[in-house]
Length: 136
Image (cartoon, rainbow, N blue to C red):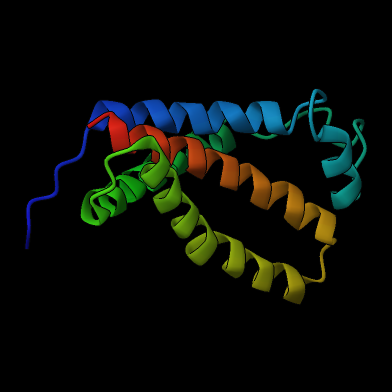
């Protein structure tokens, strides 16, 4: 098996960026109202927020996901921001967008919910892929 060279600091940084992007994405500044409408909840319903463990797990998931994206970028040979974004796009499209669409269809959830969620992950993968490709 070939040596995998990844930059753990970069992985942590893009994990943090992706996590914080989610805080912004689902905030009143961007898509909170549309997201709540799509899940059939009100501000009052969500007043207490998620449990702290949910936020911890979400952060850990982002860091692990960025590690895997970093490995993919390593093997792809992407070394520019643009090629890193392309690698991020391919991972997003092949491993997230299509599979989550399939799940969304079977669960009969609103298309708007899928669009809000999938575009958040797309933006995170594009930004992170670009950074991971140039900051090795």
